[in-house]
Image 1 (tube, helix red, strand yellow):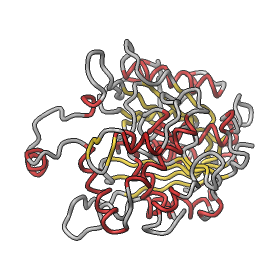
Image 2: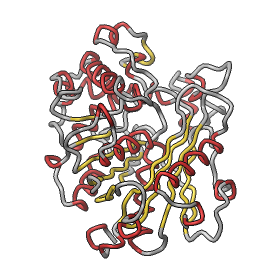
Image 3: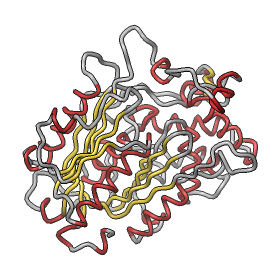
Image 4: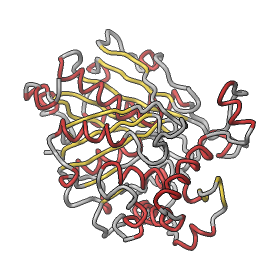
Length: 391
């Protein structure tokens, strides 16, 4: 059942939002951060934990959050309980699953929760996403060739885009610079100091063509949203954000010979599904919150959603369209490059703030339609949400 076909009272909305401290801090486990985020989201909505009858949980790289979260929160007699994992696409998938539960009447108030604590005292941020065991099979062959972790695999995708379309590192740099400008207006952002294109070009190589400023942050923290029905949300504390549409795509053909790896992503299919469900086109979108594990991911997603033509993402970024004052309000909290990195909860959190009109200095004056994306694996998984402006 889709939002448009649900009875008006059962149309899904996001009514609660929770965010813990984010960034480089220690002393709280992923499970503790997830529980804190869940409580914050419930309190934000003006509900009691006892009124929650659905819980969807997602663990980050440390795998520190699981189904036992319902015991940590004291939740009993749940109608819906599940652990979900599609990496950076999980947040969008959780909201979609929760929305279907609301429209079907399966549950009345569903928490979607993420928590992670990859940063450890005395260990570098880069080590947080390093290999945890010796891989075998195809992954073992890649590792023996020096391709380990996400950085070189995404670098291969970006390099292929460059070779096909002439995309340059300077064009990627424009994305990093634009998002840092947005982050300067976000009190929760980890990185607020301005950067220039020259700063980007001078930052060290991580995996060519990626420099340090092309890569997302590593953060500890937790985030949660509470999904309920429009009817239930009428007397709650916060303005309700309608969930207008959702879609997923899992291409499943990573690194096969003659495939379109690096050139086309799951944003095409998932975006078409979500926008079709919402009854909108890309021209109707006011605010865009894209998953930005790398600058390249932003660029290729812009193309695949249709904000510019295929192969035109580099020129579009270099045109100045993406920063404050540009023609497209993109990653208005600084994204994962400069804001904070909580997987798909990063773009979702900012999207809800924008849809509510609560983003402060960086608030978009038009926020009736907000598009949110999540990307998981190495372009393996994709989720798209379309949110409406709060009443």
